[in-house]
Amino acid sequence: MKDLGERLSHGFREECAVFGIWNHPEASRLTYLGLYALQHRGQEASGIVSLFEDLHIVHKGHGLVADVFREETLNSLKGRSAIGHNRYSTTGENEKFNIQPLKASLFNGPIAVAHNGNIVNSLGLRKDLQRKGAIFQGTNDTELILHLVSRNPSDDLMTCLKEELPKLDGAYSMVMLSKNSMIAARDPNGFRPLVLGEILVKGGKAKVVSSETCAFDLIGAKYIREIEPGEIYYCDDEGEQSFFLDNRSDKKNQCIFEHVYFSRPDSIVFGQSVYETRKRLGASLAKECPVEADVVIPVPDSGVPAALGYSQESGIPFELGIIRNHYVGRTFIEPKQSIRSFGVKIKLNPQEAVLKGKRVVVIDDSLVRGTTSKKIINLVRAFGAKEVHMRIAAPPTVSPCYYGVDTPDKEELIAANHSVDEICKYIEADSLGYVSLEGLHRAAEDKEKSEYCAACFTDLYPTEIPKN
Ligand code: AMP
Image (cartoon, rainbow, N blue to C red):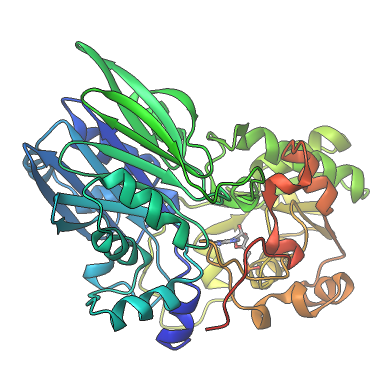
């Protein structure tokens, strides 16, 4: 486990979801549903803050959205506007204070903030603020943003944000609720997604912001556009307005891993359907790494669209050779006697009917440490496969992410230290193939390669990563 200083220097590797709604009679309920649709982005904790008159009402707790909120809690979260957050965290730092949204009382009124992404220069900024007397209660980047805003001398919240946000390096897609407005902001690189939608309500429109469009589908909101990298979007009862940060550049660095793994396939992310991108990744993989085989099977669920793409491009039939149990929680009571591959089998069960005597292509979205692939390949063989060819719908993962995806350090990333042949031997596959970086960029329908951050596959970080 890293020490606090080391972890803070890069921010915590948090994968999160944010959601916000302005001017809807069922604001907290729709926020709850939005968070429900965004559960895949964080399962450790969840929270909602609503705005009632000029007070902020808050409810948050550990666990899944459906467990944190009850009918009574949603009834108590009164008001026509609300923001919410789902949090994922690596072990150790999941204490209650870190659950978002955070709320604070500034001299010009209450403010609540929910944020997705990691601020890479947070340790330096934090130390600076502490020297000037700031007292931090938690260990998250959101609190840092609150301190920066609260110390700005301006009375105007937008001026505070325009002056303070450029001090942050790294990733932030955030929503804020003040006493009379909702604000959404995205860092100039646009690392993490953030989208704007609206819902018709009596006498006007409710404005909605979300990490992904799948939340809009559930609540019947219309997708309008992305919040632009470097944009601060503001809405209140008078209307809406956009401002741009001074450090905004023409160059986006959107996280390509959102397309590979992180986002839901039914979302439009960075203007592209994730499902279509993943299918194209599978098709590229079939062209770049062909193999003679009888059947293509996905590692469910994240490998499914790419496996369909591989099958359609190669003509090799697609089958569900591994069935996933969707009801596996974080913990379960293990048997007293050891069962081979129990950890993976409780979630993924191969089918002999599909696999016996077959040459099988197994498709997964990514290979990180290599342990999952190794276990799956062994299981697929144990259920009768004659050959197992592993195909990965992403390039080799060679570097950790400092912008909000939980990837292990370099020492644990198998591709950072081993060749494809060595990895193939380690996972005990008959062959192994990855999609190329060009194939990945093409699949994400990139106009120019510079539109995406692919640092986890290239080791080229678009911002400086401070060492401490
Ligand atoms: P590994 O055993 O470390 O190679 O894990 C690879 C598996 O983890 C793949 O099946 C991916 O779908 C999944 N995966 C990749 N990135 C992440 C992530 N950031 N968080 C959780 N799971 C991931």
